[in-house]
Image (cartoon, rainbow, N blue to C red; front, side, top):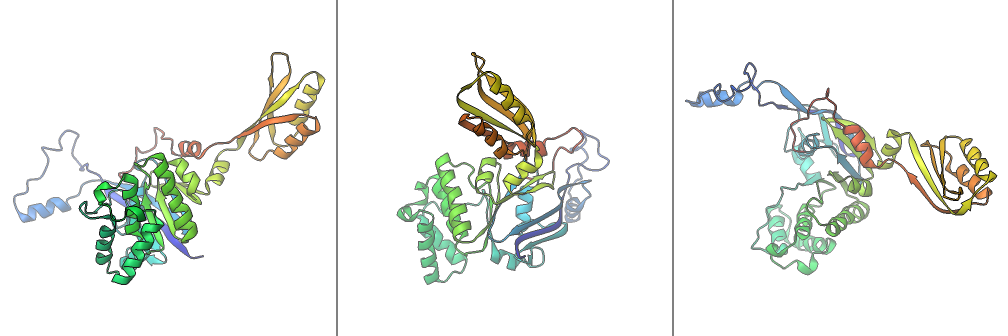
Amino acid sequence: MNYAIETIDLVKRYPTKARRGVRPGQGVQSRRRVDSFGGFFGTLTANHGAFVEALRGVNLQIREGEVFGLLGPNGAGKTTLIKILCTLVIHDEGQALVHGFDVKKQPTEVLKNLQAILPESRGFDWRLSGRQNLEFYALLYSVPDKEAKERIDFLLDFTGLKERADDGYQRYSTGMQRKLLLCRSLLRNTPTLLFDEPTAGLDPAAAAEFRSLLRDKLSRGEGKTILLSTHNLDEAQEICDRVAILNHGKILACDTPGNIQRLMFDKRTLTVTFVGAVSGEPQEKILQELKGIAGVNNVAPDIGRDNSLQGLSIQGDKDMDVSAILAVLVNKGLKIGEINTEEPTLEDVFMHLTRRRTDEPSGVQDEG
């Protein structure tokens, strides 16, 4: 299988600020004087002590055309990984490939196939209109004039900015600025796009619109591969085909959101509410039959004031036979008003996997 992005045992280390042999509180007094060019160079190359591993043997395979989410707490290594992929940071060990091109050995080919949209990326001139800003960048990217005009018209329509294309950039809302940033990133029509917190700072409506743009238009419609780093777990669950949870520089889980939820927790609860009520001897028979179904661990009845059965809370394994449960209830003549399944959310899994313990390191030195 051809992968859009593949990392193999990827390692990145950063030097710590601490110096070997320097006790706490002595940092200022122990600094070396810089009184010559040689002294300045020596200060830059001096041994700064131990290293912290921002990435520790990361292995990922991201298929062409999928939306892949990178999740993790602050300092997990997400931003370091993204910057390595777009050739802004050089890794220490392992290999990173973009459409088969090595990011360290073939950076030019990598950048022909990948475009990063980072939150600090701006660079638009406030005095120009949205269209003029895109024309300027098309010139920088050496896009031929005729092709640039057609591409810009298409992208403005594609992102819903056509009606405001000739307004000054200073009049754009945050959501519109984010869309113009996306237009700029698509000028070269690369097959893979990297996003770092794509909807941060957007209001709920603008965020929902931008997510739809990524999933429905770019991924499903255009066939783009999208890698996004996000703290928004609902966003990841909504638009990502697969996610990887990263913590302390290591991948803790990688699968579809649904599979990760099911694999990490082996229990679930089924809550059933009845229309009408059941009382007397049939109540006990129902409970006994339900307890005998494979995977059911406990059945807790909801008893009303008149001692009637108004609902059930059924706890069981993740693979308990729900169809058999419903068959028992229907065969007993019960009319079901509402049924709900309580399963762990992606947030539950995230918190379970990334929960810090006292014997774990405090974190890696990384922006995201």
